[in-house]
Amino acid sequence: MPELAEVEFYRRVWNRGIGDCVTKVAIHARKRIFRNTATTVLTRELVGTRLLRSEARGKRMLLEFSGGNWLQLHLGMTGKMWVDAPDFTPGKHDHLVLYQSERALVLRDTRQFGRVRFYQGKSPPSWWNTDVPEIASAGFTLEFLRNFLDRHRNTSIKAVLLNQSGFSGIGNWMADEILWRAKISPRKRARRLTHAERRKLFRATRFVARQSLRVLGASDSELPQSWLIHQRWLGKGRCPRHGTILRKARIGGRTTAWCPNCQH
DNA sequence: ACCCCTGTTCGGCG
DNA sequence: CCGCCGAACAGGGG
Image (cartoon, rainbow, N blue to C red):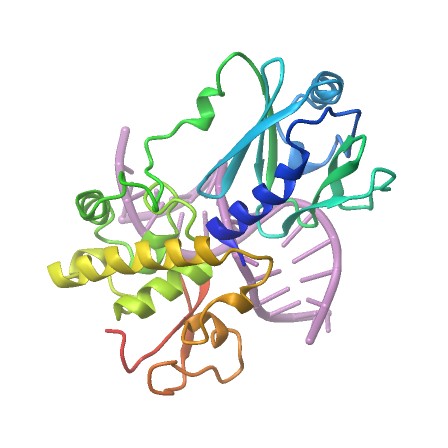
């Protein structure tokens, strides 16, 4: 399962290392995933620190280590995290491995659209903080959504949902799932959404985000069969409501699937 | 060979 | 200055 829910899932996987010391760090320092990061410092400074806690915001996560050391991870398109044996040997795309006495914390990102950032200081790095509310939090209100839509009134609603400064953690499949649930055509410009549609969009966004977070898991198979996600990549995917063949097109720069019968 | 892909950023244009 | 769009990034798979 991807996007905000997958980030949360992977974050919890690495939480098994909380409380333990980092004994060794293995990285592919010159790779794009470390762009603008001081890799030499990162490698040197993390050894001997203890993993204290972690937190997720949208598609990013922040790990705090003892001594004021912070690591931000973004998984991009192909990032994965898991726990392996302490004698793990990194493969070609295992760009960051944190070794502890009992295990190895592995980050693999084949395409490297993700990013690793390192920071030292008493409090979290300034770039960790944004004014964007988490969708599952009380800060994500109908008022906030209305304002965001007004600011991007000439953009297709699909592209608006992919904009991380308004819909933190929403990605391609979640955006399609939300629009299908709210019965809104992905091509519709934000300005043309009625009051009723804005309310439905708000409810659908929170519902999809919260349900996905609740189910968690490394695959999408645990989401209800009634969701669009199980149909969207099939050659002849059908609308879960009434079986209409889904339509597909590139909208907002991404492949989009929707039901021409119930989304307007 | 050519097309596709759960994401973000940058340059050009209006 | 704001916002929209397409291309680029890197690699694997159909």
